[in-house]
Image (cartoon, rainbow, N blue to C red):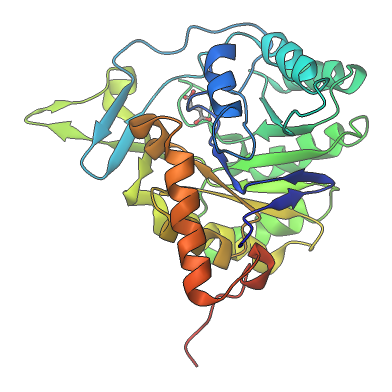
Length: 311
Ligand code: SIN
């Protein structure tokens, strides 16, 4: 029997597939559905210091090749998610989880992380440095100086396992610069990629979402090559202790296989989960297992990062 089990840091997961933050994770009910599915884990919606309504609707649209969204970080406030995952982790058969967080300012981010540091929560934390959809707030991880400063301050007090959600980078020089910063810190993982920010989708003569005059983060088929490139670029550059979570354009076992081949230790599903619901995890797991059987691989370690190049 082939295994799709994996680990991130000291945390083990029976399956390498899970949701991407933002999809099917806004409420306890949605999170419970992911917990009950074939997914190996869940990540919560990114929680901010206070609850947020987010941007005006319509703020998400399915498109022929994926999706566009400008949700604007609607969420119940980080305490809601912190309390839920802390409660869940007490159950003996609970999966391990990821708590996604960010403040609307650096001060707020530190307030949130200090609260988590002092809490009973022991699982993984994902700091979202890449939301493209809050008007007036640029994606933090495109500002290398600020990113370095935030991480330096965070790791002066935060000792629990922490990773960061990254936007896509598009230039080799940026992969080099970003990796040099991340390698300075005891990050447990980086998650590549958030949506490709500020795309525009038009139907007839009109944009398909309301916020920001139609500009929004792009997911689905459009973004898989960019996601794979980011996963592999960071796999090549980061200290081996920093694992990679691959996110972007995964709607089949073949897509998940490619993310792992590029170096991902875990693979997140966004647009396809939104379109298909939690049954997507069982389907894609079976498809991934079938590819592994066909190729004679027993575990993810047999092919993780082993992408072939052309001489
Ligand atoms: C959003 O809420 O706008 C999406 C979350 C994200 O892209 O980080």
